[in-house]
Amino acid sequence: MLPALTLGLEEEYLLVDPETRDLVSEPSPEFMSECKERLGERVTPEFLKCQVEIGTPVCANISDARHHLNALRSVIINTADKFGMKLMAASTHPFAQWGRQKHTEAPRYDLLDADLGGVIRRMLICGMHVHAGIEDQEDRIDLMNQARYFLPHLLALSTSSPFWGGHDMAMRCSRLGIFDSMPRTGIPDRYESWSEYERMIERLIHAGVMEDGSKLWWDMRPSARFPTVEMRITDVCTRMEDALCIAALYQSILRMLARIKQRNMRWRIYPRIMLEENRWRAQRYGCTKSMIDLGRGECVPFGSLIEEIIEIVTEDATALGCLKEVQHARVILKRGTSACRQIDTYTEARKDGADEREAFVKVVDMLIGDTAADLPETA
Image (cartoon, rainbow, N blue to C red):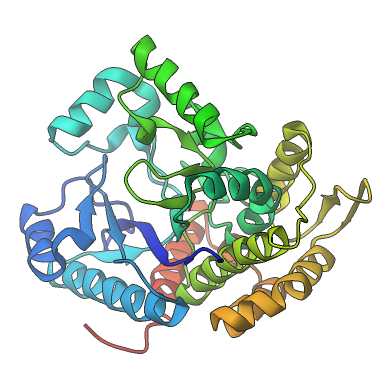
């Protein structure tokens, strides 16, 4: 039997002052209260008060995920408007300063602050996580081992963090460079079995460095709370359709790996250093340059790799009912990711005579508009 591959999406957003276009460091407490009243546990505060996180319920398919993600984004956008704020889905704000932000008062966040100090205080970044339901523990480990290969490709399609603290970072994804200062990050090691993975967790808990597996902040991990494998490498996508594309690709890749496993086949396991090299190229260039085809041992245009992946998973995407969403990767390649749009917007504004701050304001306005662009329904 193939795993269920149910879906769950989590997205983190930023709250923006519509006058200054800077972040709202102290949003009204009533904002989160009203969000909770309307969405319950589907919305939660984040470590920094300028952030808000949403999570869909368990979704049977990508159509179900679309319905829930649309509703959640719409409610947060409308509620933010009511309290004089705008919502922005991007992994970094172009010019906001992390040192001016305030962390949410809650025992969990107080403990994180005490444990991680300045590392957690500068986490002015947002991501997107996708859970895929895999009932069998051994399958979770086996499919994670193989799916690590595709993590850089998913990251490249999601990039939305080219600017950081008022600087052009010359990267499409600066978020991971910031996040990697946390412990226990990056592409996970290969594990031979679920029991080997559990023994590693138990050793770290016994050593007193973490309480449970939720403190593994890898790019992909078995969830500590759900029977899922959670993909965590991607930036948050400004446009909802891009987010659904990445979720559909992830789901289809896992189905493809499970399907070929039934025929006693598997994706080749490569050394982690080679996966990390493609991860770096995704951070630096996004989808605009080349990536290593590890089978051939040479760099090839990223678009060629995506076409190969689409071809490989077409049977699985069709079975899952998400072929249209998978093929949306071609739209992302043609149009560019959010990072591409941000860089283009900034460059054009500067050519038109805007100073640096004015150009960054143009970028924020573009991001606010694109965050709501794909929402066909109103909350």
